[in-house]
Picture 1 (spheres, rainbow, N blue to C red):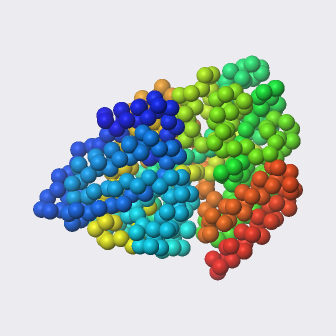
Picture 2: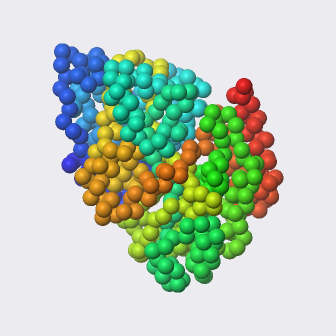
Picture 3: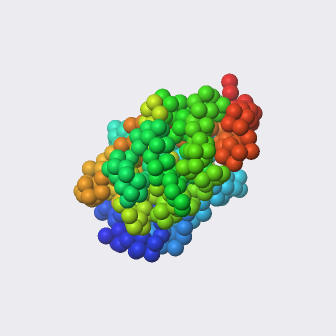
Length: 444
């Protein structure tokens, strides 16, 4: 398996996989009569494919190889992979490209970009690009994705993207530290009260009991605390209303801040990127973080560790996260059809399974967990199923119209609370007022 070897090489070099990847290709369908048997498109279609990763190096080589392999099986289609930096960089480059008429044919972007892309009339729905497939096949494909991952993917009665690199937040904990503190290393805290109690016992000079990052996705962490109060989310499903100063949000942010006030979590903001490093270096005994860090922790932890669903208040709960494939509207029909074949090829159960194994992200298709390789992996490493199982309690990630502005409004005010510059109520009232101003034009 050429691509699997590339994965192994990337991980051996210490690269934390946070991007697109896959396993080797199945045998393709040869072209016939100047057209691909799979795409039904004219020959010589060229697709520009934008994708984000957090690092370069070997991972970009994996993407390049995937695109080469796809073209070998679909000789009428050439995929041009364009590394576009972070998710935020990718969003900016897509928007710039759309305005100039030189945007991508297909891209991986945050699932939360959905409403922004719809407002720009930028993307095409799945039914439109799948018109050459039978309705039964399309329905079977869509139904194979976990419903939790479709929450940021479907609206207006249509499916607008295909989940690829998806996640939930999970609790990582240091089993050795638990044993040292007199706690059961096989029992993670399952409630807010247990989280506080365990964190107090785990805290000592040089080590905090818990770290919850508050830069770059602070809203995502806040969602965990609201969802755990009987599923209360930060926004409605239409993306035109938020509940930033609702009682559940106030209660959730108050609890989050109390962890620092109790001395079991560092005061002030905690960096997203350095939280896993703190965990691996023993500076914190527990952390909230994406399951996308699972392989990184598995590979680099020098201690026994565990992974568990997030502690609950009234119910368990975590927002979903990650990116989807989107196909763009301002392109010729032949390009859209070819892009659809590429997306389906990239999201086959075998490729999605290998992607999950090598990164820790959740394989978004149910059938991926029926592959022989995934069955073996999860049997040997059952923590790989925690994030998937948590989907039973998952909800949509914060996504609204004017999403960038709305997200910044809540993130700035979360940090105001954690740094002590504003009270919880004042901060959330300010965030609500700002967001309502941005969303008013979208309310009927």
